[in-house]
Length: 287
Image (cartoon, rainbow, N blue to C red):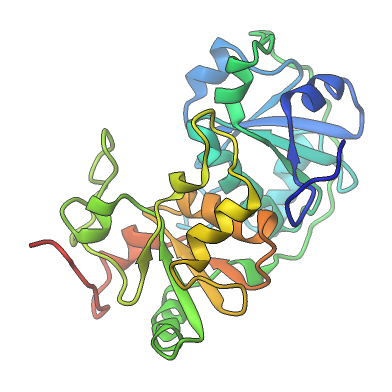
């Protein structure tokens, strides 16, 4: 691959993907919330990863335990030495969520198809309905990388760092969600959030500002202008959030993997937790 203009070599193009379909060191996964898409046609040899059904604990509102994560990776035929290449729908919301979750859970070799399914379709990539024959392997239990994640009480303390100019809070939802007019994205359900608004001190930088019309990422200098112009600079500790953390994972990916920000933590509780919690402050900007 040519030298990447981004901080880390984590993006692959559709041409690279086509050349590595049978590479035994690569496991391709379609990460999506819509299993119908996968069944209708997917990259040849690609497995399926459902961000909710596969990565979340079935009882506790949390991620799989390290032991359950190891079992999942083994079922998907992935070894620690293997590079996982992710692509998804909706310009890679769930693929970047899976990227973040895999890194958090201890798997380091992860890449993302630039533009996801949108770019694959535009480039005329040959998809298949044939299900792959994936042989299970043994995957060792890994240690979680907690520095990538932040919890509710830590976010509350982080508000003080934001006010002191040492930290930044990035709300990546739509302006309507941020202002408090709605508690969900267009065409999505309310999902039971009691209050609208945003976490005090957060700036609103919707996730899609980072993308070109074809779903691929903008150039580094364009991305830097988006964030640095809003005071989200590399020397600050940055927290990203949205509604359930899939969109904020996309922004986490941009900041850490493409721009090289050293200290960015994704708040996976996001607004579904904050907007329902007792005793937590919110701000609204609706008139």
